[in-house]
Image 1: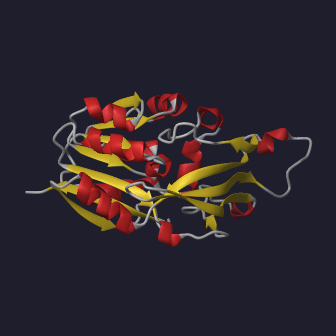
Image 2 (image 1 turned 90 degrees about the vertical axis):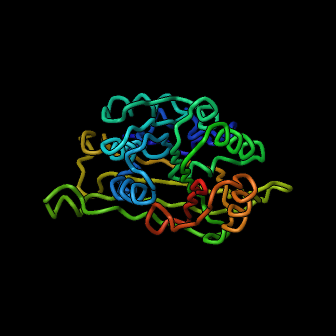
Image 3 (image 1 turned 45 degrees about the vertical axis):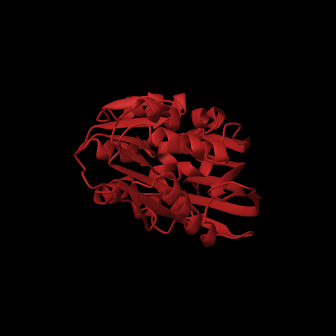
Length: 280
């Protein structure tokens, strides 16, 4: 059983995808696929891309990258060595797996399509992070950039977001279905606004918890029943943005691109998608 309580997640580097401490201990592929459908996200990204078959740099859920890699050449990027190592083993269809920070990668990478998904932007918590991202994107000609952001207008202090299971249990046994439990909870404590930043950044203080495992008639003397359970919680800080703030920033930072806003990549998620296309 993974049983990790109150993991520190102070995000010393705001652009890190996850602190290495818990990206090593927790199998995030299981979390992602339990509460979201990677195939649906990949299909939505494919729909948004002007040219699906063009090579892309991708940040987000590894399984989403694997679906996209069957259609196009994908370079998967993540800051965590644990996540990149798992991705190389589990998803051999992904053509390239790179450990590193996305802005640093893009400075050297001329790939014309960029997808930064699954709210990686929640870790951009300084003006410097946005300045470096804009500079990296503009370092080479690009055709299209997709980025999703947490929506400040969709949340409030004291709000709970309860994650529901995406789809049915994989077992056909109804009795076993009743003994499975999957739950997630984001508890919003307070918001702190970063002064004099463009875009305006509001930092949410959140208590996060997840449980995926068995409940019911387990034998107390048989530890094998719950060896695969995942039960953990941690405190964290995530960046939220208004649509107006992001739209204004994109218009200023990328004047040669057409900026449009779309609904969230993840169903019923408090986020929105930004689609940047080079102006013709």
